[in-house]
Length: 330
Ligand code: NAD
Image 1 (cartoon, rainbow, N blue to C red):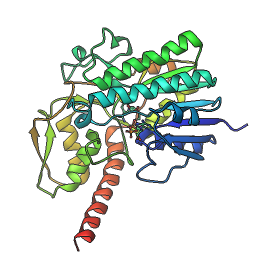
Image 2: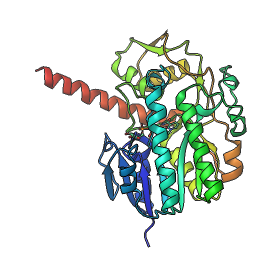
Image 3: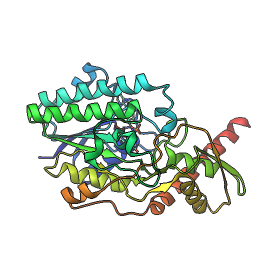
Image 4: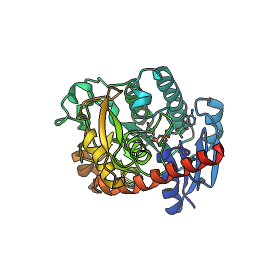
């Protein structure tokens, strides 16, 4: 019998890539989202447009004992969305409602296993104050002090899934993603994250021009290419390891160095102007000891390899948009 999989958030960046991967692996896939994927048609066998905050929608989409459920739906975005404070109520309320609905139905319908996508944003601020020495090992999550309401909701929902595992035996797998990037992700409009935002800014700027980078540019992060993220997710789901576990890269880079990397990829000479803006913690990096120990795997691809593919894709989007704007103004 063909394995039946449900992907929630299948119209989003990671979800749409995951659907493609699951189809390549031969699964039957149902996708659900508020919208279809923006940049290419979905490959899901069945795609339902629906709002997972509504119980009635959740009951419609999670109506059978799926072999696997991947819960990626969340109200989220990059620093410009989650660190300004303006979206806090929506971020907490919308994502928590989705998770409360889904975990209960997964239990009720005897789903064989469920994946939950948590985030590096759950890690405490006090361990991420030094750009060059952040601590993000899984065991450092408590005492909790996430830097955003987004992180608090993720921590709550991790605990929600884990309590269904403990009390009802629901097979749960929880990963904490660290800045996943790649082609076919949001690249404009305010919800884009740093890799896409930098690619867009560089692609829109002429040789010798200036781009703005939020903060002093010394804040550090690591970024994981989508293909490696999905390998990690599938390995976690195929294991008997519950997590939570980091799925991220250990190649830490400052934001200014990152901007220079993108400029180098573009072949343009670009000047950086650091401006005040939402920036989150000073330093963050994945710690991959636990995933290496439990799954005998960790991501290895260099940041620049993934960024070359991502820049090429975003440059293409920028050119298409400029062409469309020209046609409209004719
Ligand atoms: P995304 O925003 O591209 O995808 C999330 C999808 O959820 C969107 O398509 C959105 O329409 C959908 N959604 C939101 N509210 C919904 C609702 N009420 N009903 C139905 N669908 C709804 O984000 P992504 O980058 O693909 O992230 C996927 C998951 O991974 C999210 O849970 C996110 O918090 C988590 N995560 C991502 C990263 C990252 O760097 N991309 C890092 C840490 C955690």
